[in-house]
Image (tube, rainbow, N blue to C red; front, side, top):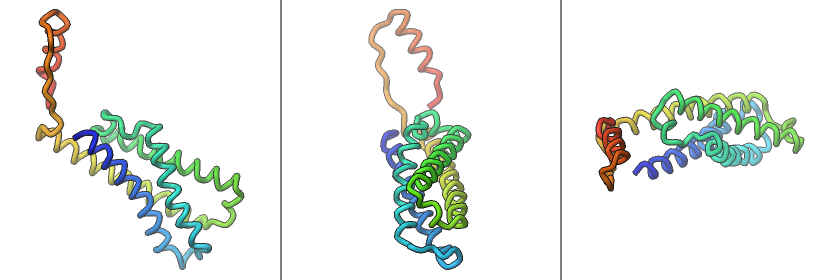
Length: 161
């Protein structure tokens, strides 16, 4: 069940990057004169892929991170900043950064960061509720009654679900 929730978090956060990027294009198209439009759409999709890779590398989906708001937010924001730096570096080396609206870029950066932190907060709260209900509990069998087995049993027994 924990693996399924981790997959759902990955999909939800990646989808959020794309949707907020596309929504940002739609909201700011006239104001920032976003032409050619297809380049901005490609950036929204590419940023979701880059975010997925950077989020994996920064440990956004580690178990301890998924149950901690502070660690979760820190890693998500770190992954998003890393993704933006990677995208801006790519744009610089491809000499494409001149044709992109700086206003849209700032709007996109901030709106996706806010959305990702809100989503991660909701995910963490939901996971904590499920944990309290015992959804992630697993049975453990300890074979052997030697000193190590008794230590393990005494460690596991008082651990809250």
